[in-house]
Length: 202
Image 1 (tube, helix red, strand yellow):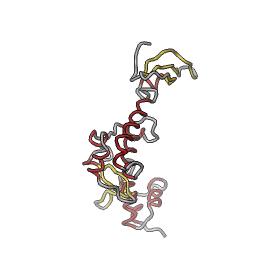
Image 2: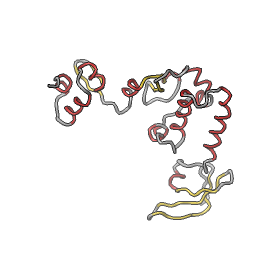
Image 3: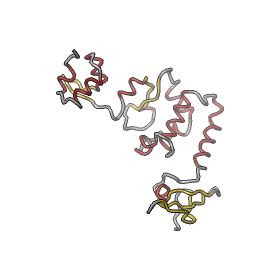
Image 4: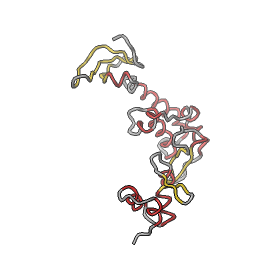
């Protein structure tokens, strides 16, 4: 196998797991050897022995240690975005980076730019994308509380009634009926939207 994938060059087949899952020994440009699943390397999930991520992390820490924000909530927000957008090993990568969500270059290259554009992170808030399908950039981000962010999730279902198109959490605030009750009425009991949203609990 003559191909090279990122910084990894295949050396030899190491072992086969099951019938078809091949694990190869790769040599990284940095000189380290690494055994990885061939499928993950070919699809770009793994492109080095780990040295790229370590180098990027070290460079970010070195470059940003001078501002005194390392370990603060706003710094953690900034570094957390980078992790879930660009590190395939991140637990949330499949919901962000794997779906094509990125951070604008102005922010990714400089924490100071992120701080300048977003301002200090208010207590009890986290960063939220106004357009949940958009990227992390100044025009699409804001600080919000957990309640607002929950309403803005991609998996929130909205129900239209009386000229309004709202989530169950929003309907709950208007009607006083618990969101779980309305959800059960619609999904499990087969009620109409009108009845589910308007009939008071006895």
